Image 1 (cartoon, each protein chain N blue to C red):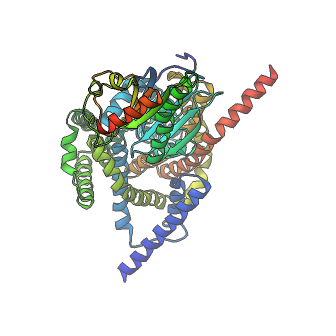
Image 2 (cartoon, one colour; image 1 turned 45 degrees about the vertical axis):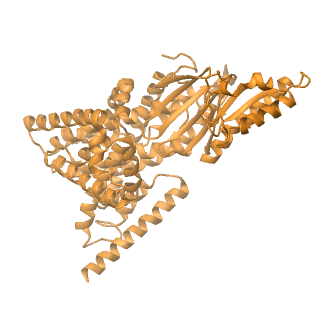
Length: 178
Length: 390
């Protein structure tokens, strides 16, 4: 029965964006969702029955125990999600394109008044009109990388675009005013 | 004048309990042992004899048991229980065999007969889910990998109580074999029916009690709980079991609201329950049972650590985690007192039972959390010494 420290004992497993997320019910307490990071430590979120959440981080010496259990408020959860999610993606892309002269990355919101809120990505004809590429869309802190032409925008989406300075300016104009 | 005196006594009682509860929080232990001590200090043979409020406190302590078990049932969904049963039935059986035996053997050695043995077995068997959940949360161990194993053992115990309590009630009432069998059959059928209802039509039970106004909701939940408890009590299934099953049947959203509105009431009435149990115990009888209680504490600590160790091993947890799980489970508390309280209602129980149960729970409710804390440094010290030797 002792299969080393990384036996999966969770009730359910989700593969989410290539990461194996293990979901465990804790009767009377709540639900634990966690995954094993590259260095072998578990990172997880414990959602209590009353909705409050704790960030869990397991130890290196004893992978069964948690070295940190940090209670997070709703706002803190969102802040952490944003820190790890959207801007990081833009920073990453900018980093990658630093080598390439003249290419930039920027993110633009789909505002409620945008003509493309509720319409497909293909309708923008972005590449034809501005020679830029839409590389990702961020919605509710969830990143959809390489959205397909039939991806439908919603007001509040953040669109991550790669292109020249001039192209990006035009792209912003298109997303705002059509 | 009588009412005035009763109010003063009740006021003094609750205020005193509040002081004790604060003290318990300060020194980081569960308030249950201090409530028991409070009960010992007052009443029969104690420092201040209370007169005139027995009618209220007796009924309030019954309500306390109903609320304790109702909230326990509310904590678990039926799928938790069925899932726990599927995954941890073996740990549950190991738990029962290892931990019910010390109590039963002690009672038999003391010459309390099979009835006393059955009741004492329950006292040493069941861990305190209240104390343990608090300790795990305080020590930041809720996210640990051994914690699901610990919680599964608690779930199995609570589920087993739905059968153990009716059996014990029947035996204590010396109903005879056939009538006893009928009670157990009723309990078993009720348990299955409740689990099926909760899994399939959880919304129906919730609809009976649910209401957007918290005042109406509170009255309905309490009303239904007491009704169910009363009927269960008449069927000899025991009031607590009825409340526990009702708690399970109430589906999750409603259960959360019910937990929120009922928790303060549970704290109030359960405190009265512990005090009344202490009140009914004569402190003068305690010194005589201390040796037995200590022996029982030592043995049942070892067996409980073994249980947790086994359950965590089943879940594939490493060495230190297994010891943590074992130590976490040691605390006994509210359930042991519920069982002991049930036993006290029977004439066939030896008068030494209440003092022994009280002393035992006092020891275990304090020892459990302490052990849970020191197990990690102790384990580290032992393994490093072993490493130094080899």
